[in-house]
Length: 171
Image (tube, rainbow, N blue to C red):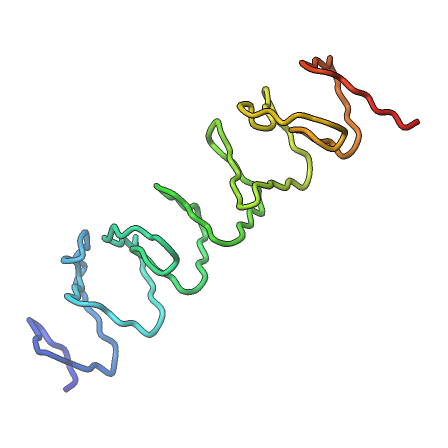
């Protein structure tokens, strides 16, 4: 049956071979209101285009990449800023092509190896403590201790040592 319906249409099943549309403009603020309300799940085989904000009213925490309020099995392309109100967990590589800005007084890198690699210059403003202040690592030669410098060392000011200073010169 083709045509325009007015009023309520009800039934247990239905198949439409053309476009299903509504001229209603009722805004949606909850999953139970709006111009189109679906009481169960919706299977959609094609693209979804939303002209407004998409809100997911589910507070399921994610404990992996297959659960949570939103699960995406493919990639995600986001053209603007992203705000995350809780913890961000990444199980793969992070590519930060424009750098990383940390808005806090502390920055911690904790990898399974404990190593951090920096390609380029590390600029530190303020006093820096290297190593574990509670458990000092003694130096027994040029290749041991809490800080090891592979190349030369340039110091613009005084050097103060709290222990023995040993200078090894092979020339």
